[in-house]
Length: 178
Image (cartoon, rainbow, N blue to C red; front, side):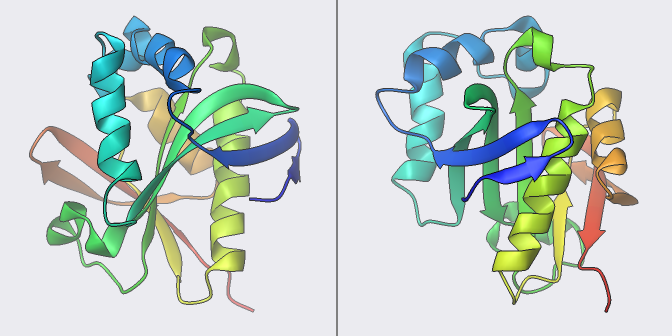
């Protein structure tokens, strides 16, 4: 992804690289505030197994490190929601793209960074993927900061979904109509 100027700084996604990014991502996954939603705390092997599932998978999901002004700020997963098990729980459209996000450093949370980065990423996905008409997300309903971040990034809550591991808010950001 090219660098995108946002109200909070210059944002760029870089594909996760193993083993280089594993120590940082393991540290983030072991933060209790992150683990409450991601449930990936543990030794590096737990984080690596999660990442390998995407890096060695079918290409339907890609893990990225989000850099803000050159500093690692978050972990993002961009995935084909229409090819994901999520598609069985909502009226998926071909080429729906999905986003998962965590802000790594505790100092990055609660400052509006998530909203700004989600908005920039959704705009980028829609600009570079002509077949995609909307970007979706499914944060846990109890994760009110995440739901709020998606709302503030232009996503609307379309439904509540009963997923295998959580009750989720289906958040949708459509392509703007011209």
